[in-house]
Amino acid sequence: EDKVVQSPLSLVVHEGDTVTLNCSYEVTNFRSLLWYKQEKKAPTFLFMLTSSGIEKKSGRLSSILDKKELSSILNITATQTGDSAIYLCAVSLNAGNNRKLIWGLGTSLAVNP
Amino acid sequence: GAGVSQSPSNKVTEKGKDVELRCDPISGHTALYWYRQSLGQGLEFLIYFQGNSAPDKSGLPSDRFSAERTGGSVSTLTIQRTQQEDSAVYLCASTAGGGNQPQHFGDGTRLSIL
Image (cartoon, rainbow over all chains, first blue to last red):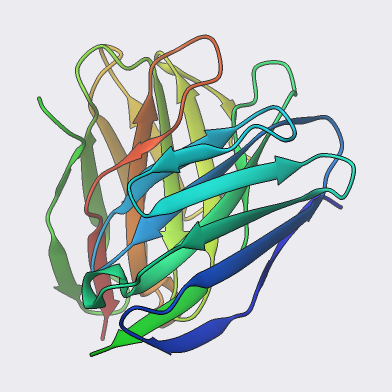
């Protein structure tokens, strides 16, 4: 059965800390891995990773995929209270017409002032 | 529209009633997805539309759940004879068809069954 596992489930840090969130997957026919940030409502798209070893970066956030280890990390440097959210990882499969994503349960990040 | 729009944002109804949730995807997006998110749980896939057809309905939890999409745009998710376990946030996402595109989500409908 296809699955995506995120760790830790929750994390509490202080402003200015650096955090690393993990996502590992066991799927048939991997296509890409996506990271989303969910605050109060809609998950918002952060990164899509398809190739190993190529870092994607947006401001203080960066992510990289390791297809040999079947995992990805999301790094947030110099955290701010606005980074508090649930970070969701999902894997897209190559499965014909099926574009469904397999989702992890998320990491709940709380950044305290 | 600029983003995925869902309505209503909140719905409270009595057990046994039928509800209809609406999703208006990003203009031009051909693929549309419905998910359910319960408190403390991940996103549960319900159904996927490509245009007006639904190649994958595998996530619909029971025959009380149905969805349709007309004109390749707006979709409605209908839950008949609601049960308390149907209480959740129902999220809709859309993506441009073809290729490997990220899904863009609406703000969801928070459904509470009394």
